[in-house]
Figure 1 (tube, chains in turn purple, yellow):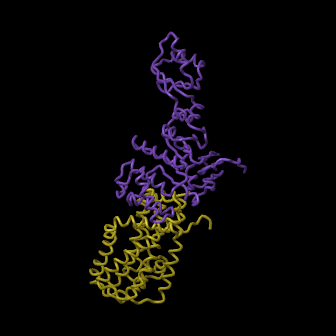
Figure 2 (figure 1 turned 180 degrees about the vertical axis):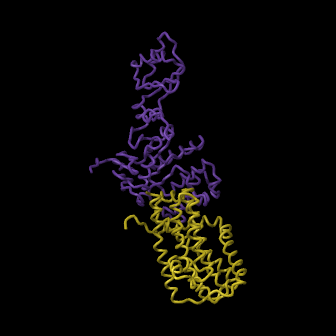
Figure 3 (figure 1 turned 30 degrees about the vertical axis):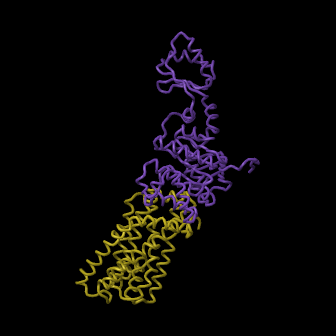
Length: 317
Length: 259
């Protein structure tokens, strides 16, 4: 297989033609992407898109049925210790050890990574301070709030001094304060040179944190690129939401869509949404019409718009 | 053979052992109490109560006969309870194993760590019961000093099938099947309460292919002080069982965690 000769640093994760099957069902079919050193990379998609399966294969927790994954230039396969030694994983559930104290939970993690008792103690102390958990060091994990548990799970994933940190929905169920703190910590890690691989259902989170992202659905990749570029490409820069509008009015207004760079328009329940760029031209034009312009709300297009555009509005269960 | 996983005794396994120890320290009082209530009741009620009506068993007073047997059972049960219910929770409820395999630890190391810990647990609980026997004047030989050896192996031996059952169980209730279909019958028929010598040959042979009876033989011989050459056979069976069964949980856990 040929690889382009790279002059920059090698990719931290390189996925090529990845396939995963469960019986007859192909959960992932022919997915390829890469994660560069030091970036925050997002893997997005609705439930059942194949995200978790892909993550499990990257973390050497599931067998690969086709294609290849290289993590830090090592081939991924179940139980590859050379990779596992260099990554930290924050899984979706708070799988802290309920029989151990806060400090014990992360100290023992360091020991699992082969650290000496002294080394693990020192690193655990650093991380407890950094995650603002020091005062809870002796507490049982069941006595922690949701936000604290999450911080502890992240601190634990950092015990092995990972070069790649995998965050699988790190802020699900957290209150806004706790989310902000997690975001701040992720940015700090990035500035320290840690590569971050993130999945999330919160599009604002992905938009804020990710340098680059991939949107998956039905086991394949739909879009790839920096959030701004993906948004501009798929839906345009902004959105006009018109409410309290009749269908006649809509037909009349829609005649002028060609006068701006409209990517698409659609009914979202009672709201007619118009996506595109330079929509002020459209607004100006509409204001010259005889009929009064209905109430409208103008906003920046977001990753959420992209996500819904690509994966549809149907519920996934 | 392909797909078979052996327990892997490594630094990582020792750290899994350490994790179990740290967890145990937090509830050792209730754990000791829970594990002693039943065998102690059996010893006192059956040994001294029923013992009044039973002249002798295999040449020794009834209570002296069942004491060593109950010691072996105490070790088996301490290990079995902890491994079935404990491991089931660590696997299915708390995600402790799931978290462990995201670190450099492998399923084989997790299983090896559990074996190490259960060997120590067996030694610990067996020793405490031994002290009870000692206090009641039921220990008759210096051979007893060798007891740690069979106790350690007993711990590893019985943790293997229990861990396997915990890995395969679909819900908590299924663990009880293991107790009522395997552990309790073994407890009743493995020469703890009566010698096998008077049983029909077929039934005796059937019992002799199970592991507990051999542990009971060894423990009783050491405590009563009449070891014979047949103990080597018992020891060989116990070791063979331990080694053979050890691939079950490691293989099943690996499949479960990274399948």
